[in-house]
Length: 76
Ligand code: TRP
Image (cartoon, rainbow, N blue to C red):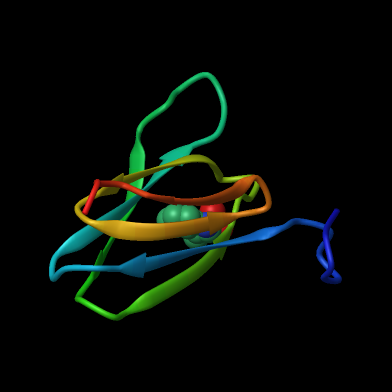
C-alpha cells in the first residue's frame, strides 16, 4: 500500500560502490532506455514508477528497497 499523496510507492537505491547506474526504461510498446543516473558509493536515489517509466535496470553493486522487499544486486 502506498503511503504518499501520489498513490505510487517509492523505491530506494543505495550505491554500494562508485559508478552504479540506474537506468529508466520507457512505458509502452517501445521499451528503451530514457534516463541513466550515475550514483557514487553511499549516494541514494529515491524514485517511483511513472507514466514514462515502467522498469528500472540497475548496474553495479547496490542495495534496493521496494515494497516487495530488500535486495542487493550482488552477493557480498
Ligand atoms: N522523468 C522520469 C519519469 O517521470 C524520471 C524518473 C522517474 C526516473 N522514475 C525513474 C528515471 C526511475 C530513472 C529511473 O518517469
